Image (tube, rainbow, N blue to C red; front, side, top):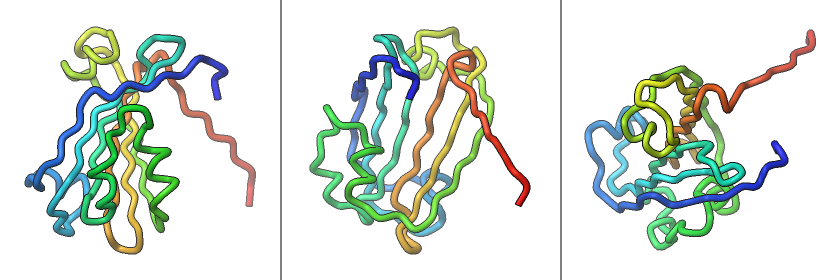
Length: 146
């Protein structure tokens, strides 16, 4: 959308059992198996967005066999799993050590963070956290009266 060269890099992939902190991200329903991904989205060969994603393998078992080395999880999921509801949370945060390293910025630098959760019926499908350097991203909304 920004008319810049896009690239995607998979930084980490792990199939694991549910951890206590996953209830906060995927909701209180017990998800037993999770695919955890760390991805870097680049713009003009520069880091643009760090994506940290959890996919419920109970909801999308075929994701466990997908390497995600060439395809980002977002477009892959959209093409395979119908979602019935989604939630976005937008906040500001200081860059964690991991985000600072991935985004080539100072630890503690300001970031825009977008967290997204999606469900199919009442089954949690995915949680994603997108971290952007504050100066590289903005959100604009245009409204009209109803």
